[in-house]
Length: 295
Image (cartoon, rainbow, N blue to C red; front, side):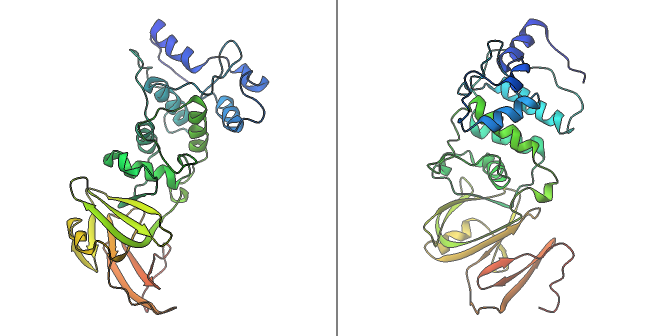
C-alpha cells in the first residue's frame, strides 16, 4: 500500500488515531470485558482502521475530529478495495465532526443508494440538515447508524472513537448494494404539516410514530397516479395517505383514495422504471424479472 505522508504534521494526525496495533490482540487497558463496544473495537483495530495508543489505552469515549474521521473512513474504503491508494492526510487545526456530516461522507463514499423519499423516525429528525436526510436514511436502512436509545439521531453531536469503530465495522460488512437494507418504502399514516421551503412533510403512522419525509429534490411526486408537487400534499393534511417508492427510482407514489378489499389487487401503476400493485392499502413492488401483467 502506497501512502503519502506529510512530515511531522501528518504524523500527528496518525498519532491521534493511535499507532500501536499490537494492543488490539492483547486488549486495551481502558476497555472492560463487559463494555458494549468491545466487538467493534476489536474488529476495527484488527482491520487496522483505528488502533490503540502507546500506553495501551483505546480512549473509547474521546471525540474524533473531521481529520481523524476522514482517515478512518479512507482506511475502511481501502480495506474494502474501494480505493487503491490512501489519500494524503489533511493537516491544520482539528475541526469537530458531527454525526450528520459523517453520515453524509459514509453514504457518499460507500455509494449507498438513496430513496426517492427519505423517511426518518428519529425524535429530533427536524434538526437534521434536509440535504443530508437521504444519506442518514440510507445508513439507517443498512444498519450502520441507528440513533440512541431515546430514539434520537443527535445530528449535531460529535462521534466518539468507540462509535466510529462501530460505524466502520458495519461498513466493512456491507456487500452487494442490492442487499444493503430496505429496498421498498411503504408507509401508511396521517399526513401532517408540509414545509415546501425545506422540501419536507410529516406523517404519523397507526402506532403514533412520527415520520419526517424528505422527497429527493430531483425526484417526481405522483398523487393518485397524476404527477404533482410536494406543495399539493397540503390539501391532504389530517387525512390518511399511503406513500411508497423503491430503491433506485426517482418516483414517490402518494395514494389518497383507498378502497380496501382483502386479497384483491386494487390498483396497478407503472412509472417508467418500475411497476407497483396495491393490495389492502399496501404498496407491493415485484422482484426483478417478475411481471404484473394479468393482475
